[in-house]
Image 1 (cartoon, helix red, strand yellow):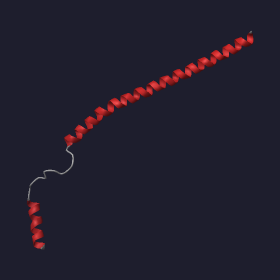
Image 2 (tube, helix red, strand yellow):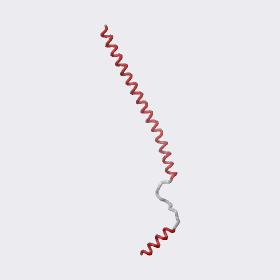
Image 3 (spheres, one colour):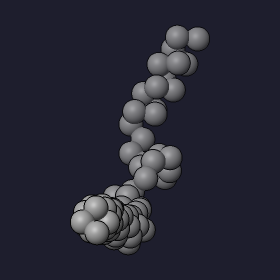
Image 4 (spheres, one colour):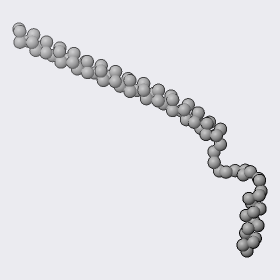
Length: 83
């Protein structure tokens, strides 16, 4: 039994047949996957940056409008008291 196992292992080690399928990914497959991921993520990132920038501008506009309204209310009260 040990002799047959030794023969089998020796035969396997001496065979120079390359493995046909390792079950892993090739370098080309990984590069293609990375390129596809970049092509998908880049527009999404640009979209998110645009949304954040628009939100920041809208908040600044709303704050300015609130300050203007407060100033107008102050002026209106002051004029009412003057009359």
